[in-house]
Image (cartoon, rainbow, N blue to C red):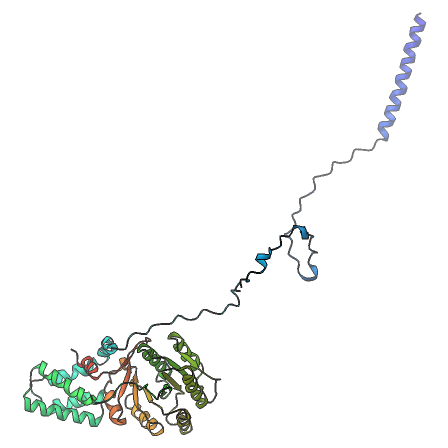
Length: 408
């Protein structure tokens, strides 16, 4: 029995030894474990750029409706008049708003403050000299000098001084108010009260009145033509403008802008075109439209250019094929003084000047040019410009002018 137990123990020990050797052999053959892979980095791609042209992606198929799913219009809807939808990109620009010009009646009175400021030295200077206790020869010479400085002119100045001296001597006038009244009467008489200062716009039935505006460069001629259109419209006249100044860049555009503001049509041609042809067409259009007045703006010509002055005469002759010119207005810059008289003489030789427009009168103290130019041409000053505003062109009124000159 003991022998049997010993045999079992030996057998178990033998089995244990064999099992240990096998396990040990397997451990030697096993490869070392591989390292655990690290977490891959996160890569943020830049936002995709849109593709164009050949690089564009093929558009995805979107769900489409079948013909059965489309709602067709009814028979009543199909016969209705289609409504046009205006494209804002190609739509015509809105028409400019028509302005209502300021009435011309009493316009000079409303603008007197500007005139009074510029002419203050003339009026106040004369009143100061006349108010001296003793009006000796030296004083009268100073009065003459004051008038000449204001561009009244030699002959008108001598005439005014002689009349003042005589009336002061006879009447014995001495008080400031009496002297002021006396000076006012003499200045109004010198300006002339018998002139017809209205702008002639009446013509034969069925034919518009034709007014041609002439002058040298820089006098504000085109602007004056536009302002004159406002004066006529304010007085109830319909106007057609003729842009016959084809030599100055943008002159036609400038005139057309003035016309559009008051609803007046502008007839124009190509830059550098024939001014006489445009003037002719303007009158023709005025007749066709039944307009009351046709205003023709001519190119500003230097009075020393004989050829250009001859062309101005041609414009006048061509326009007169429709009928006589009712008015030829010469635009003069009041700040040029006596040089304006030289211009006036030359223009008067080419065309028959019927009236004068003095511009920039608010910017000079030489208001005596009104008297001098009337004496030179024998025609009246009909309009004066007293500012840059659209309604600063006023009919000339001698009494209101003198009142602004010497103060009320």
